[in-house]
View 1 (cartoon, helix red, strand yellow):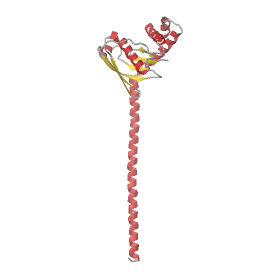
View 2 (cartoon, rainbow, N blue to C red):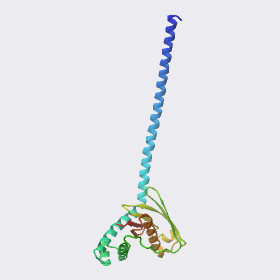
View 3 (cartoon, helix red, strand yellow):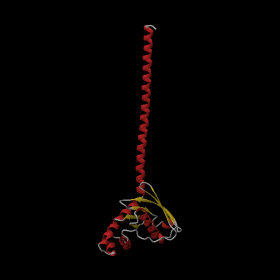
Amino acid sequence: MNQEEFSNQLQKAFKDALAQSDKIVADANKIYKKAEKELDAAEEIRRKAEREGERMADEYYEGKREEFAEFYRTQLLRNLARHHIEIGKSNHEISLWLLVEQRFVQNIRDVVERVEKYRGEKPKRTPLEGNPSITIGEDRDGGFLEFYSLEGRFETWIEYGVGTSILIGVPNIEHWEAKTGIPFERRERVLSYVAEYVIDKKMDGKGSFVVGVDVVSVFGED
């Protein structure tokens, strides 16, 4: 091979290498642009999921606005009633000050006396007729509760509130019989049994509750 042939082959080798290098760079640019598009698409999906999650959360809490309002109002009234009971005020005085029925105050008084009586041990529960069973299913923030007995059944949501408090959504007074099949006069007894079950399972048997219109408010022992 003479000098000219060698020079031509060397030049060709350089051109081939340069062309291959250009192809590698071009392919790399294509891969980069594709990855960039995929990253932008993934970012948009993430933003959309965040927006959707916020919307679902807003709708969830908006749908339970009345129940949450009832729960926090009940919690405030319960704490005030308990304070006045412990300093010796009568049911009549407390009901006038707080603008609540005396039955509400008496229920709180019964709880205070029961907690004091069984302090340090679990209180004895009154059995419920109808062979009842309760199932609680949970997720990160709350879950569901299903009640079944020979009288009727219902399924509802539960939500963990501030501290050791728990909210239990319940069929309201107006729709109770239609949704549960249980006589209205048994409503408070059944819901009291449900609340006591939750206290035993979630609060080691030490807590109190108030049966409301749309929600049962359950409180851990202070």
